[in-house]
Length: 537
Ligand SMILES: Cc1cc2nc3c(=O)[nH]c(=O)nc-3n(C[C@H](O)[C@H](O)[C@H](O)COP(=O)(O)OP(=O)(O)OC[C@H]3O[C@@H](n4cnc5c(N)ncnc54)[C@H](O)[C@@H]3O)c2cc1C
Image 1 (cartoon, rainbow, N blue to C red):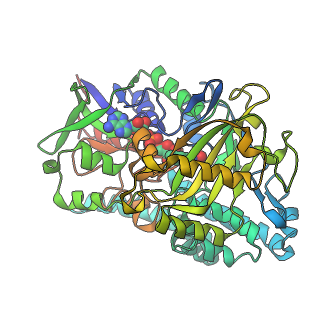
Image 2 (cartoon, helix red, strand yellow; image 1 turned 60 degrees about the horizontal axis):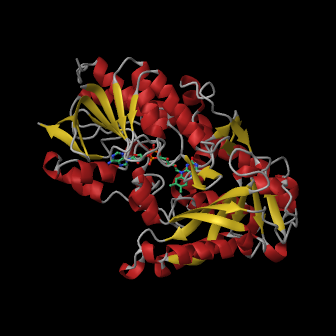
């Protein structure tokens, strides 16, 4: 008998387990995959070539979690990119963002936009700070019944309101826009030249199956801005050894505190009696009893597949079935014989642009068309591709002189129209992604030595990401903060006693943050302290 059994050794499950074990609980983590880390893992996808299999860039990982779990002491080292982004623009040349060059680069297209950059960044940063301050807090929960509980939630809401009030009216207006408007409208209000809007707008379509002009997409842009690398806010970096270095460090930290991690052990059922979770049953039929169960998996997967329908309130089930899931994401890893030689910035010797996030999407209208195409055809004829070549920063990933690259591509339809299966189109779409990069770097196609492909269906099959949703559920106003995963359940507790959500389906949502795992652990420990759950004997 365990105090807590955790379903899923994704990074959130691992973080949750470590905090629980640090507080003295006996914790078991189970994962269906043979490797811990969920979507944040490094694997050898072709002999001698290693890469972050799915998630590939680090920024959102919370510094408190890095410290508390001593991830540095367990081998984690994160490095910043020399510049953030490089956008090849065909006839128009290119745009570089970051590394102290943004103003000069943007001025190539509009001096007015260059002059506005500082103010834009300052304002976005101020609002991202408010978001950052709430990341490790349990959102105010809407509670029915107990007046005392309602008062506690009211106080929490007051704390958030105070932070927002401190912004001042002007920034509050920006905040309202960032939570409700489209990224396109927001950026059009700031800038006139297309390339900088594309560079910033890319964040609004990452994992978000939407046009940058879809209302609410500005929030996704903001969500990608609350991170930091080694104390530098708003930038993205690389974990030496790939994203698996993060989760291996987490797994080591958890194990050092006594957590048992059992791999290749899928869970097929949460055992429930009289409205309380009592443990789990594995795919192999083993029954594991625990005082509490926490799940680091998509809420839909947990409540619609692992919990018996008769154990849940009908309304809760119906709403969970309507949980909006499905990213427009197609992910590839490629082994390369040489670096891409971009027509607009020739040379295939490593340069700063090779070590950045290379965005192929020159303007917001291109991104919008990509979405429209995917809606009607299943994938965009001219997709949005971010190419990241981590071996330019990390010699552990590829043989000397060769490279590995991540292709993070949007938009594709989570489910193809006309009942067509992704199994029949995977290779065609992978060819299209390579061609798309090749248009800008004509040596790219012939430099590809091997490739690994994840369609939305593959992401679902491999990682249990329902609809290929990289965030475990859309980040829109109806599914964030107090409404994540559902109004009344934002405190990581569901309708069943002793069953908690500790994955990205809870606040603050997707990305390698560790925050949902951290926050869920705090709530679980609170219930142990209040004797709502009894420690196992
Ligand atoms: C292609 C892609 C690219 C991404 N890029 C980035 C990025 O660059 N940076 C970033 O910060 N974020 C990125 N993300 C998002 C980020 O990876 C996820 O939001 C994050 O990994 C979610 O972590 P998690 O611990 O909540 O869940 P997951 O990582 O999804 O882990 C859940 C775990 O549960 C296991 N599981 C599921 N069902 C069962 C079961 N029945 N029994 C046992 N185990 C089960 C799975 O095997 C998995 O290991 C990306 C995601 C994807 C898919």
